[in-house]
Image 1 (cartoon, rainbow, N blue to C red):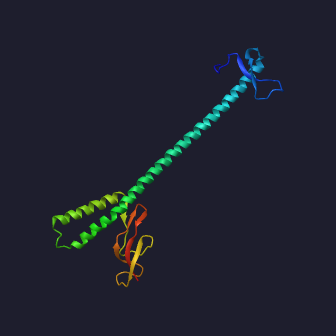
Image 2: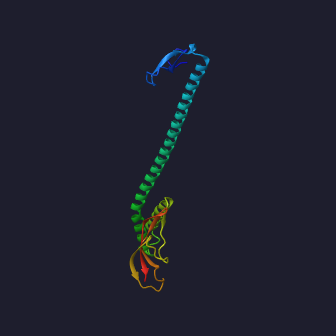
Image 3: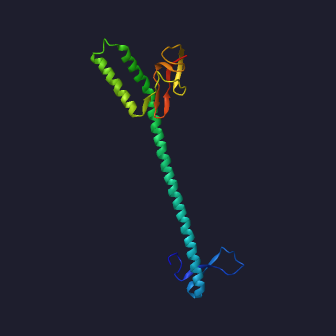
Length: 190
């Protein structure tokens, strides 16, 4: 044995009842009868097995805690990235909407100018980048008013749409993945 004792000495409890049970003394193991040696070795083996079982449980718990920590960290990082992307996209939406307004107000007279084509190209590219990040435009004209996606800015009489349907979009609305990040401002038929 290599536990700091002489190979033939093993700590065993004192048979004397006057001493506390936790106190041990060194007894010459080889001088004990074979039955006592077997009992002591069996006790030591049982204790070692118990310690091994406890150590295994501790290792398994530590591994499970580490796996949970890694999963939570990855989820937190993904959430932070999505939140940063969401804020950037929200800040870019007015720019994309203004480009679209500029294109719509140009009319056909200037449609051949190269700078007009440049503005249209910039608008298409910006919109394409936003769509690749999961941005979609909320349907407006001709759909039933939905307070979760639309913000009514006016109610008008309309021959074109039934009551409760959107007649005109004042400002585009957008959804990022499954979440509305900008409600569409709309005019609703009475």
